[in-house]
Length: 146
Image (tube, rainbow, N blue to C red; front, side):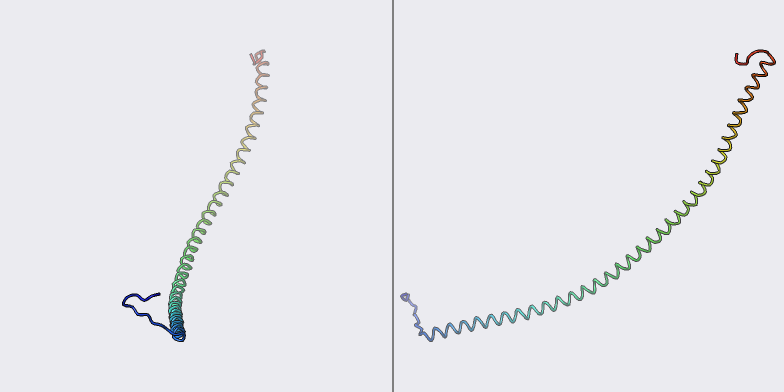
């Protein structure tokens, strides 16, 4: 390549070329080492900070767990109170059921007795009807069905 105006061309020997290449490679490796070291330090620092935040989060979760246990214990106590109330109401209904059952049984017994008495009265009325016909015929000489 021909030189342009106002520019000079430097000619390098083979040793100088290898020296420049070695210097550039050493600089690149040095930069890579520096950057990786800095990256590892930053990463360690961030991980340490994250561990600290996780420790704080664990503390908050433990507090929340305690609050939830206390809240669920209160809810359980309220459910137990409601359950005992329902058991009391159920016992009252059972008592009322037994009371009404015994009263209905007594009414059934009385109705059965009344039913027997009505049947007995029907028989007696049927017997009296026959007696009245007989008396009618005997007294008036006519049949009572006319």
